[in-house]
Amino acid sequence: MKLQVQVSIVDVSTTKKVPVQDFKDTTFISRDTILSCHLGVDQHELPDDRGEAIALMSKALLSFLKKRYESGNLVGAVGLGGSGGTALIAPALRSLPLGVPKLIVSTVASGHTAPYVGTSDLVLFPSVVDICGLNSVSRVILSNAAAAVAGMVHGILMESNVSDETATKPTIGITMFGVTTPCVNAVKERLGKQGYETLIFHATGVGGKAMEELVREGFIQVTFSWNFDDKTQDLRQQCLFFVEFLMSHSFVCI
Image 1 (cartoon, rainbow, N blue to C red):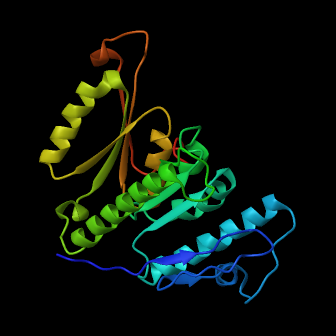
Image 2 (cartoon, rainbow, N blue to C red):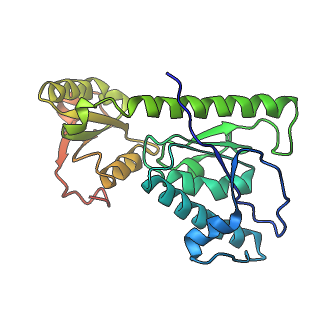
């Protein structure tokens, strides 16, 4: 089955002068168009301070993507940038719902990525070389990144007409440590037999935050937290089972 989508190039540059380029048959969305989504005016001068300009353009891009997604005209987004470009694009792409393909080819993809990815499903694709024109390495990287995005978008479009039986099931979020895996697996199996869908999160790192975010977005209706005394391996005696029916102070979003 052959699928076709419209590809648009979005200008989020923060330089004073934007070079004119020929994009042939590809739709080009100007910087002023992006800014107008956030500021409500047709033209706007960016601040002289680079940090302030990046922050403003990032908010404008977020507003633009939100409007495009809500209107049904956006099925995926891919960005390209160094440290500044990644900082600009990442918040906007993170704002897109879970499951919407989102990827950034970035020079900082192999460093501390938590500030860029957060709890989202944003993919950071290492650029290997700096973002400075095309060469034998960047051509391969960009080609692979484009293929990855195309594959994700194709998957989304192919699955859009397939009904998801789990969509109507009550969803339960469960936090888990490695040593509590057998216990959580047993609970998961029993809940599954009763018609519940379970989402398991590691209790360290961003697992808890990710669960909170999914609660905010309505993916999770009930949360289970598993805590244990790390001084003993006797989980039968030391494992504490908490059922949080939207009443726990442990999760700000609930």
